[in-house]
Image (cartoon, rainbow, N blue to C red):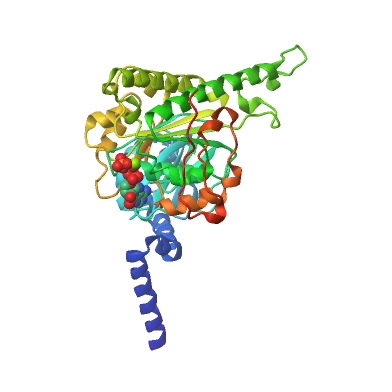
Length: 451
Ligand SMILES: Nc1ncnc2c1ncn2[C@@H]1O[C@H](COP(=O)(O)OP(=O)(O)OP(=O)(O)O)[C@@H](O)[C@H]1O
Ligand SMILES: [Mg+2]
């Protein structure tokens, strides 16, 4: 008897300590079972309390009246599936006639505390079927990415969403992205995660880091071209535009449209080309983009105009040539001069880390998802890395990238250094790095040749 009491006490204490110190472990050991039981037992009463019931059908009322039975109870949405996950529960329900997905969406906060969960979000899967994703703990406090994230070409699992699902940066679906945020808000760590994720893919990485290269040059082994000042950046961007034109020539020469070529075989982009002649896709990462757009003298102004023009051309025409832009900065608005808002309009994927004012958040979301603006300015200062991510569909979600240190990113890039492709048009910008055996030697940069 005493033995089982001591065991019970030990289990309770272990559960409490885990819940306090390691919520993810607590969830997987005790939390998931308790929460599933709680949801199953309380389901009907919670739905009733949250106003998610409908009156019984008329025929059942009439039948009860005719047979002198008690009046049937209100009906709750039918549970189709309750699935436990690493971070919470996924409840799929079928709405009753007269209910809509908006009813459920507006009740998520009430459902959250009624079921004793940390967060609840809802989305309509198809007409009348709603999925409630519930998290058992704050998944963004200590981000742990799942080991298996479903590999796909040019799709990088870069962060975790607040509902516990993985947030992907899918370059083929959303070719260009803009990441904004105040200083120390986590932009460079987000970009570092992208580089670490892209390193294992067949892709050429091109970096422009006007902070004297402190963020991207340590990762040089996996980069096909790097620039650390606006002058080199201009030459690099113009070389990229040249590369883009070469790729379009290649696509044209591969088209050879005749009547007997099936529709599906006509190439309009690099992904339609046969794998043996397909050029390597290029991801261009720009950190601190404002540095490229600022000028003090007439000459610098000319350089700025050429840089912005090249960026706009890459953003407008790059997708089909497999050139994807990933731009990071603190602000990116019309105060940076002409051409900037035009460039911004081409950057579909928007991510805003903590911003200091509404106008910065507006630069990310003002033109696509106005309610995400409010979410971006509410990001607290003491949790760097939290961001709001939206796209042109108007949807948005809170995300946080795992804290990948520069050392971890360097190790990943070094491991995949042999995947670094040579892009002939960018050969002059390839960083010269010491062989891996003497990896402690300082990295030096090749002097770019002037075109
Ligand atoms: N996802 C994250 N998880 C935990 N900590 C983070 C995360 N992202 C950033 N940090 C912390 O915040 C610090 C600042 O991050 P980072 O250098 O990415 O900011 P930044 O927005 O690029 O700043 P700046 O504009 O000055 O370059 C990092 O050193 C790191 O300690
Ligand atoms: Mg930075």
